[in-house]
Length: 222
Image 1 (cartoon, rainbow, N blue to C red):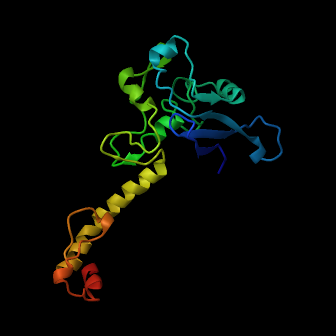
Image 2: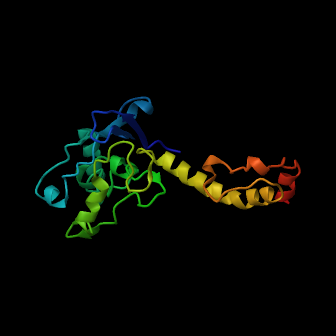
C-alpha cells in the first residue's frame, strides 16, 4: 500500500458554500526523511466558481475560489499526460480524483435519494483540449449550493458528505430488505406495520394489540 492523497474539509461560514475543502499529496521528489513530511498541499477550495464557464476559461479567466500550490502544479506538469488541471478548468481536485470534477463540486451531490451523478458528463477531447458536451448543463455541477441544501429539489441534503449520502442510501436499502421479514412477524400478531418508511419504526395499534409471541421472530427466519 502506498500513500497518495489525504483529504480534509472544514466547516466555515465565510465560504460561499459553508465548507472549505483541501487535499494533500505525496511528493516523491521531496528530500524529507519521513514519508509524512513528504506530504504537501495540493490546494484549497471554498467555492465552485459558478461564473467560470467554458467561455470564461477559454478567455483566460482562472478560479477565484480555489488555490493551487505552485509545487503541486509543477509536479502535475512534470508528470505529463492528458490531465490539463487538477480539477475542472483549474479548480481543485486531488491526484486520485477525476479532473472533470472538483472537490466541492463532487461533494455537493451528496443527497438522499441520490438523483444526480457525482460528475458532469464526460467531456470530449478535441483539438488537444477537453470540451464539455453541453456547458450549460456542466455548470449545474459548479453551483455554490449553501451548506445543508440538496443538489436536487425534493431530496434531503447530505451536507457535502458523500459518506453520509452512502450511509443514508444503504440504510434505505436495508430498510426495504427488512419489510418482508417484519411483515411475516407482525402478521402472526395483532400488531400492524404501515407501508411507510421504517425510519419511524412499525406502526403499532395499541387499541387492539396483543403481546408478540417470543417465538415469532425465530419462526419467521426459518
